[in-house]
Image (cartoon, rainbow, N blue to C red; front, side, top):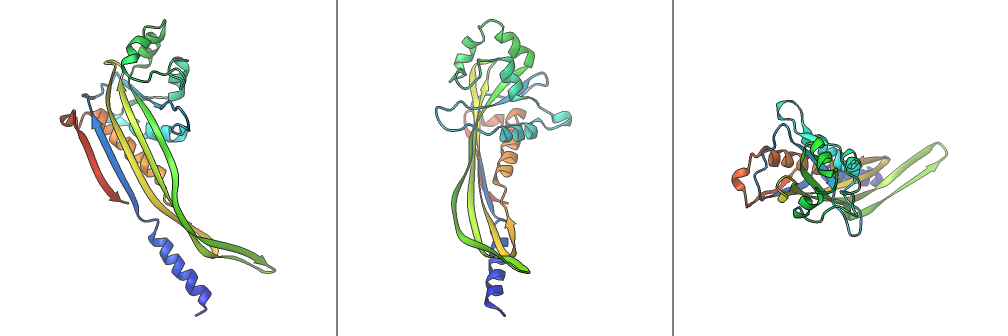
Length: 237
């Protein structure tokens, strides 16, 4: 067998093995009872940053959609931009309170308490984090000639997605707790005549994990752990 095809076949087998393994972890810390009422709502906002980028709008929308759910177990989730616009400028990055105790004083500003009350928002989820490339290697080359074209080689990269959600109870002006998720996964591309990508969608998994744990948090299913920390060990997907 031609050595070039042996190399491509071996690379393909390696690629198939890599993306199937993603490691995920979810952490939760609870300070207050948080069984949300049907008349109450949640809003997810990007945590104000001194420098660097806050959580992406797309990721916040993804978590919000997963948290909301449907049917009898649905949780009211307000759109973050709608909430920011209605309370402008008091929850914008430059003016947002840095601690929950400051919310009580903030709500004394003319008209602000009424606007928050109209939204029915009881909990603010401050979301922080992002995705970064942590490792990679290999190479792939493509070329074309009259009547033929193709690629050969093997490249891979590893990405880590890490997000943390800090939950404020603005009715009590206290921190209710936090939820964190960390997902790592390896993607690859194989040059076997045509490029064959195998992508580990770490951000999508992180969204599912975060939304699921926030639903548990707001359903009060683990209120027995108040004051303590809950930890879910690493798992594969």
